[in-house]
Structure formats: C-alpha cells, structure tokens
Image (cartoon, rainbow, N blue to C red; front, side):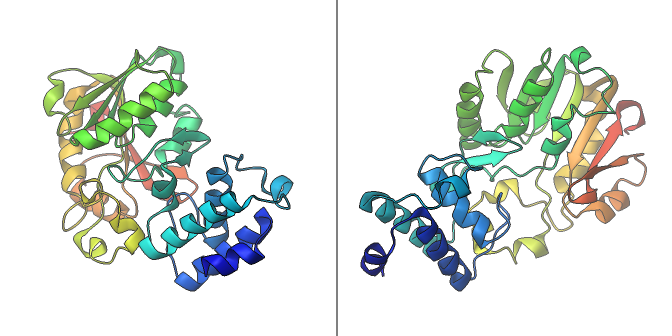
Length: 297
C-alpha cells in the first residue's frame, strides 16, 4: 500500500485525502485535541511538516518530496495500526494556543479549566495582579501550571503530581516556557508534601473516570496513564479527598477550581454539604465547579 501511495500522491492535499480515508476506514476514536478524521489528519500532516495549523489552505496544493510523503505515510499507518493519539505520535499537543511536549507518561492536555484561564478566571478573580500563590494539583504535563503562570504574572505556582514520569514531562514544558523561576514541581500525593502552605487559587483536573467507563475506553485512551484517569467506582475517589483537604491549603477568600468531566451528579451527591458554583465552558455547565475557602468543609 505504501509503494502504491508513493506512486500516486503528490501534494499535501493528496496526502490529506488519503489519511482521512484511512482513518475513516479504521474506525478510529478521537477527542485528544481533534474531533474527527479530517482534523486528526490535518494536525498530523501540518505538524509533521512543521507547518502552522491555521495555514492548511495556503499549503494544500504544495508538492511534497518523496521523503516527506514516506514519513507521513508511516505516521498515518501508525495512527491506524497502533491506535495511539496523534499527540503521542508527534510528541506534541496544543491547548488554547499553547504548545506542549507530551508522551505516554501524561494524558494529552484537554482540560476545560484552560478555557477559564484564558480569561484570567474572571469574574471570580477580580484582580489577577493580586494573585501571588497558585497550586496546580495532578499537573500531568504541567499545561495548566504554565497557563496559570502566564495569566497571573505576579504568582508563584506549585505544580504537583504523584508520578515522577509526569513531572519529567512537566519539567520540559516549564523549561520551554522559561518559567523555571516561577513554577516549582513537587512530587506529592495531593497535599501530602505541601505542609501548611496556603494558596490564593487551587486548580485540579483529577482522575474522575468511573470503573465502568474505564472498562469501555477506546484503544486511543488506553495509551494514557491509568493513574491519571481512574477515579474509582463512582469516579469520586480523588475528588472527595481533594474537597475535604483543600480548605486548609487556601488563603482566606481563596478559590478551588475542579474539573469532573460528566460527574456533576456524583459530585453533588458525595459533596452535598459543599456550596459550589458550576462554571460555563464550551462543553456546558457541568464540567468544572468552583468552591470558596470559607464554604469548604
């Protein structure tokens, strides 16, 4: 198939059409930054060629070298046969315009908290310049820590993860954005290694996938570290622990932001005594909740 394709493909547009067909025939799953076969194929081709993601039409009819076509066909073949997300094939993921290095030590960045950081967590944070201490729990690739440091210029950020492999990836992203002096990486199971330190803002995109949902994950999601996905029988194992401990690590008036996927019903069941505000994201009003320090248990 590769030899035949090499003989018949010439332009970027040709390879894109070929990739979309292969992906549709392969019945792949998406959701790691791209929503369908066309978006996935566009991402792989443009970024493998080191081209900007917003210039597809500009380069669509450009002729490719045999070496470029061969390299792209190998990536397309790996995407179909390995069923790995494109981000892992390229070691590259994008979130709200930020580029991050990723490998299979971390989940592919896709947090809805990133949308809120784009607006400096307004209107809940009234003065971004007054924020001096931020905690990003379950930091993974460090994507939210980097975005938080960018959004709040006077803040120091502690980025915490229990996985040393995840922190290795986070270190690379922190260094790439030159935030070494403002982001501190900490290996810890939630708050255990933080002693009595308190923060203006705590962010967390914890594991929240239920046991039932874990058993049904498409192959693409099985490439991600289970530690970062599995949330127990009801998905709430880490969320409950986090909510019960957060008050002691927030300053007076501090804010807790937690992403829970489609777990709103379970959150409201297991944390019925916690007043919370559900925030609007592109996925609706059920993905991220906020709680204030004085209202936490």
